[in-house]
Image (cartoon, helix red, strand yellow):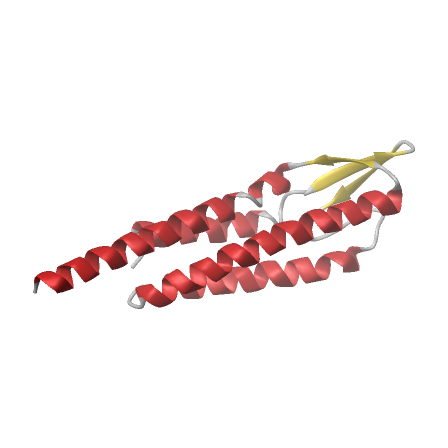
Length: 147
C-alpha cells in the first residue's frame, strides 16, 4: 500500500496541506504597518474569512488520506485524484482571492510568502499520483489480457 509510488505522492500532498497551516501566505505593508495573512490568522484583520479555507484544507486532507487506502480500487482512485486536482485548483483560486480581499481591505501591497508556493506542491503531486495510478491500471489490464 504505502510502498506504491502513488501512495507516496499522495502522502507528500497531505504533508504539503499540513504545512499550509504553519506558514504565512502573504504579508501586506501599508502606512508603516505589516499585516500577515495565513490560514490560521490574519493579524490586524478579520480571521473569520479564513474559516472556509481551513475547512477546505481539512476536507482535502481527509479525501487524500481516504484515497491512499483505496489502493485496491484503482479506477476509483483515478476518478478521486482527478476530482482532487480540480478541487485543489479551486482552493488555490480561493486562497489568492482571500489574499486579494485582504489587500483591498487594508489598501496595501502584497508580498507572497512560503505558503503561496507550498500550495502549488499538492497540485503537482496529485497529477503525478494520477499518472502513476493510471500506469498501474494499464499494467494490471495488460496482465489480465495475457491470462
